[in-house]
Image 1: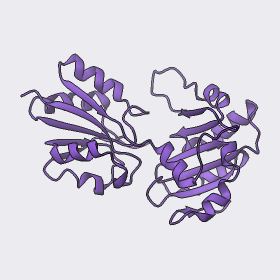
Image 2: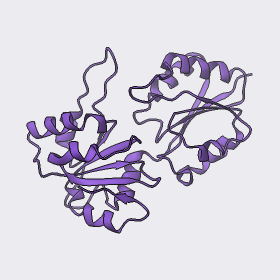
Image 3: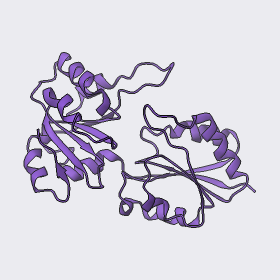
Length: 250
């Protein structure tokens, strides 16, 4: 048998943010390889599928990418519908290209199903548009993370060039991020928000770039984003109106 591997975006967490195509494929799936942060409500949409956790969490034991690649190829030779369920959007900080390239080299069909990335869910939770006419005409999605033997991340240059910045996988490095941005010329009073568990009972900590380390220290260990830019100038009042989201104290 030669099946198809679908790289499916699981979105930021809320099950009802899945695309119709993603939900349909989960219902048809024979086997699902899923990230660590995919909630049970989404996995429940694949009732007939074998489910295997292959996620990665920073600082924790995780599945090697080469092993994931091989398991996907092996599954495609056994099953008709193989779903690789990735948090957010598969093509954003998800190592999807490595899986695509490996599967194509093996002669296995692969398709990508986009998902809602966490940055967009964070903007929705804040009630703030990441682009605003006359104020923000550019957005950068960046991460300071770089794997072993990889070139250093160029996140700082991108962050300085954009009007609005969303920093993925950076909450644990909040102090270093704030220091780097301020040293490079970003104003300490630049508005910032840290959003934990975007789309599912989000916890929001608004403040300034100078306060970023203290804001990140309020988190409880869930997946978090840092949003930076003048679009957040009124985010404090926006988060006060938002329910059932939790606004954390500054």
